[in-house]
Amino acid sequence: MDAFDDIRSYRQADYQAAMSRLWNQPHFLSLLPRVPFVKDAAQLREQALSLPTLQAFQQAFIIPLLGQLSAIGTNNLSQDGLDKLDKSRGYLFISNHRDIIMDSIQLNHLLCGVGMEPSETAIGDNLLIQPWIADLVRLSKCFIVRRGLSIKEQMTASRQLSAYIRDSICQRGQSIWLAQREGRAKTSDDRTQKSIIKMLIMSGSGNILNDLASLNPVALSISYEYDPCDYLKAKELQLKRDRPDFHKKPEDDLLSMTTGIMGAKGRVHYHASPCLDKALLQLDGQLPRNELLEQVTALLDREIHAGYRLYPGNHAALELLSRLPGHEDLAVMAEKAPCPSEEKRLFEEYIERQVARIDLPDSEKDSGFLREKLLEMYANPLINYNKTTI
Image (cartoon, rainbow, N blue to C red; front, side, top):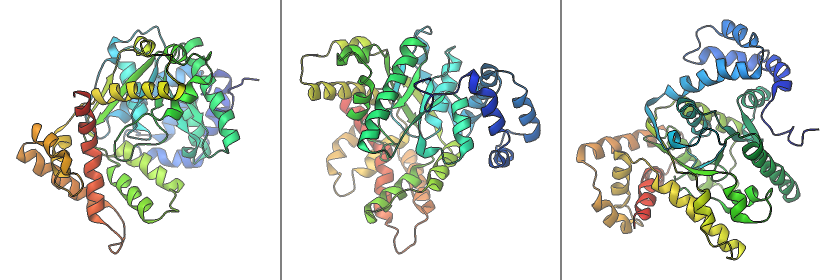
């Protein structure tokens, strides 16, 4: 039995059964007509079911779909660094996490554009809220990260996940995309969780730096001019502040996925660092384990922060945030890169529109808090970028 059967992306042996389930799922079929570029759902179903192999399905259906989805709400999708990677190697792309779905979709569209195979993508099982979603994502080169486990179950699942990632990169030459943390950084203060690094080294030889270097890690910086889910994230931050027992419902994740795909993003840029294998091996492997892990996460954070593409809204947000109580220390940084007055006015209007979209009762809605959190989302990339230049 394949040790990864319950989490891996689908293979050819899984293809026919998964396709039959997917294209006979009423809920999935009912959604197709709502997709802007789907003109005839019945014809699309017939075409998909006629494809004889998983590879043919991915080439004829999934890869074009990546391009169509990437274009929705995006003025310009660009990259630098991906085109400089060795196409014969598999890489571990570790990135900041902005959008549940679009982060990996846009990456894979860009990889195809430079002649590389799409990466496999980690997706939490909490997002598989309908059975057909699991089939669709696993047909689309996704593998499953199990959530909500006991401590003992989590250790077993982490070992399995670590082994799968290592096998994919080192044995199959298959690139992997992995967020630097569990869940999105709601205020865009992107930090690599040590737990991610601990998981990655579980399947290694015991030499932390060699084990990480052998995965060919690449730090990936994702920069959205506008985050279509920003108002949903701000709402969640207030609810967590006000209700200690607050937990998102499945429909909340579904709304975030839909909004992320369909919403306006403006310009989007992906920056890939050079492979960090050599940089990792230059760290002091004799440090105590916890200190060494901190060195590793600091290296990844520095590379991600230095690779941001910054937009006028980032500068406007920093300037506006620096005027709020508790953020006065940002004034000097804001003065060094002021935002033109017209750009600042347009961004202020955008923030006010997003605050107005947050559907909380007037008696509960803390507009000041929500505005502050929205400003933090756009200011933090600039703040962290500036710290890499000090």
